[in-house]
Length: 348
Image 1 (cartoon, rainbow, N blue to C red):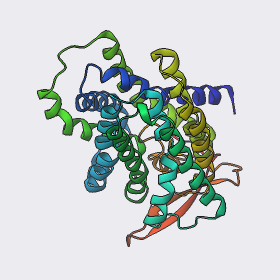
Image 2: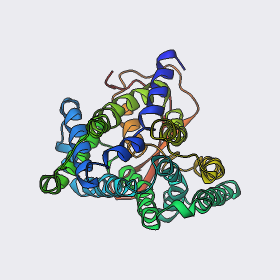
Image 3: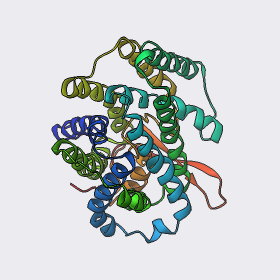
């Protein structure tokens, strides 16, 4: 990796490791629904000019049904529940619970037929990860609200299902228009709620948190993420998703004074190891611990890059990213795209 690639990699580790901290701060003054509106509106509007220069929304809106489904499953419901849960849970614990997404992702892939092979290694990974979740929650159960845990469970399930919709129905569309359209659609949906539920008080910290969530953790994040994919390929880029939970814990402890509990110390290493084992051969989501939409649009970014290749690379790696594609008859097939060696039109 070049110095630029390492810089992009480090930036993404931080950018998608801090949303849990920012959400925890913002929901002190803003309702979860209003926060979802603010974040998606800011992010979607910033990405709008880029979306218009990359084909606009015509092709995306013609697929409005899967677009709406993806938006609801990946953004509208999970972000609302995540904000609600963080009124009770620490940002550290929230980030670690989201780290269990690959475990659910493997089960979703099996049920949906996207990946029907679970060998001994992956089965052991699932079991290990589930034990890690049990340890994470069980050792600290006295300080955890059960309702918030169910909200986080719904968040995890949404993050695991949405990539199936993306990969099967939207993967052949340009990446930035898909992301921008989804964010703006979510903002429009929450606009009536936000209009009738304005915050009665906004601290400087809350305003800053909302701004950083919308600008940095949403709009800028996708520009940097696609640039990272362009530099090092999609498979290596998803490694950031295993670092994000640790970053969430670090920032929660250092900046908010949250405790590092026994459950975190025992449970997170088990979840991480289990996720690596369980998801390493999944064709749906290799490491779905990233901030919402990130890995879900990974397949879209790969396809977008492949379509925008200007020349055939002289040599490519033997490692390929497998992207499920919907054929004309509605069946699913896989297309292998080199994980390195292509040049994408990524904003710089």
